[in-house]
Amino acid sequence: MLPRLLARSSRPALRTARRAIPVSTPIIPTCPRSQFTPRLLTTSWHLRNPAVDTAAATAPADAHLAPAPAWLHEKVSTAALWLRDSCRCEICVSPSSGQKSFATTDIPASIQPKTVRVSPSGELAVEWANDIPGAAAQGHASTYSPAYLDSLHFRKVLGEREPSDFTLSDRTIPYRAWNAETLRRHLGGGAEKLEHRDFMSSDDAYWRALFDLEAYGIVFLKNVPRDEGSVAEVGLRIANLQETFYGRTWDVVSKPDAENVAYTNSYLGLHEDMMYLVQPPRIQLLHCMDNSCDGGESIFSDASAAVLEMMNDPLEREGVELLSEYLVRYHYDKHPFSYRQARPVFNVRTDEEGRRELVNVWWSPPFQAPNPPYVSDAGHARHRAWQAAAARFEGILSRGDNVYEVKLEPGECVIFDNRRVLHGRKAFNTGSGERWLRGTYISDEDFTSRMRSADREAVAAYRREKGLEGGEGRKGSDERMAGYGSLGGWLRSPGELPGEALEGKLWRA
Image (cartoon, rainbow, N blue to C red; front, side, top):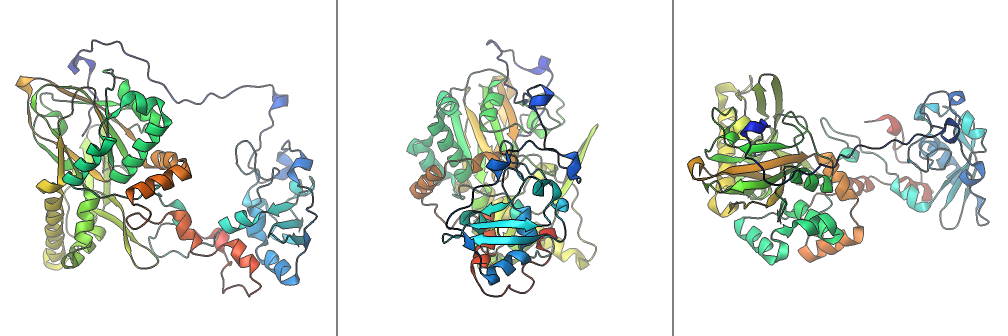
């Protein structure tokens, strides 16, 4: 929905007591200065005095460690800056916070290995010549396990406007594209309207719902308490809430002289929210408080299915290119708020094998700004071709077999992916009853972070159950970077260093 924070006088009265909304504000403990020695990231070691148990930080020598052959010593010398910067011992990385206690710029330019030893299993131990002064004073040495060395990947030289793979927004569960019928079958197979109490109290039910949310882009809860704070409590169960100029939570209810189409009783077409922001919300929650009027059914459509339909049609090659490259302008301009952003309809990228991969879909007609042709577009032919392709995309989205329709009942909450599942609403009669929804958002980064914490075995079991081991999902950033080769693999090979493979890698974006 397109939300609006309404004055209390315009909200239907509640008969239930309001509960306090939990606030995820971190509590910072205080302690005597003698018990707390901060690790500060400065450029001068004499300004730091980290409290480190040197004996614990420097592991005892493994009896199986033997001097490295000359070719390995030479490779460690070549990669000395990378290896030293990647040390994870207790002197270099705080065991409690996981944060570095030195800056990369603290490493002397002349850093070199003094001794290099290696075990038959591939463990590497390095003592450094000309180490960081504060670390050297504590008897610092670096030890690297084979698994850790294999996790350190070379980086790809990026093309123009190509994002770093390290910053990719990974998917834990691949897409499962749907139309109305396949979603009905999914919801009818035991996933329909999960009990609120199970979602809030059972880890199994919670993770099952989140896996469904990432795979299908939509889940439903039922028997959510009729309380203004409930939608925030459900959202906070997933991750932190994304506050916008509408507030932390907001209401969708019809009002006279509405400044937003969502606050009328008119038909509201399929769209996504907040496309005029740099980071539109990833997850949207809508909790139904009242829906006693005639009409007002909610409608949903899976944009990823529409995109795949066009991408798999050879006749749509030009249309897909236009929708992937032509920037559409979005804005919100209602005093005192003014936001604007431009983005393509299809956010796609090409992998190293030349395959197109869908990342997000951006489509919100109610908030499109005037969208002029490019100055180089003679006769405006490209502008007209884009409009025709966009019309075909809209036609697929709103085609009857692709639109899932449901009338939310009081106590139900729909949770959906705002960057994939488009939503709208049928017209309703305000004279026949009330329609009131409460909403909130969750950001992409916070949702992705939560999904990365999922148990790997549970993820693998869900993927097998749904037949999602591969194919429909994007390759994760770790998988992509692994394809560029690892430091461990390169160190184990006595061959020469590939041309400029390490040159300047630490400093490239």
